[in-house]
Image 1 (cartoon, rainbow, N blue to C red):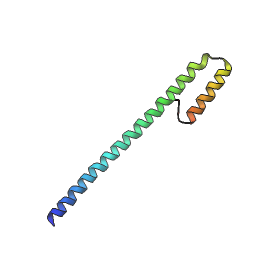
Image 2: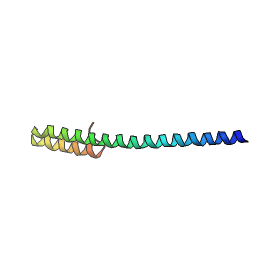
Image 3: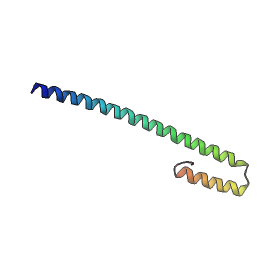
Length: 76
C-alpha cells in the first residue's frame, strides 16, 4: 500500500514536470511563429520595394502579388 502511494506520488511529479515542459515549449513555439510572421512581412516589404523601379504595369502586378501573398500567408 505504501509503495503504491509512493509510485503514484512519483507519477504525479513526473506528469507535472512534463506539463510544465509542454507549456514552456508552447510559449516558445508561439514566440518563434510570431517572429517568423514578422520576418515574412519584412521580406514582402523588401520584395515590393525592389520592384519600385519597374514600369507601372509591372508595379500593379507586383502590388497584386504582394497583397495576394501577404493575405495568403506571406511571400514564397
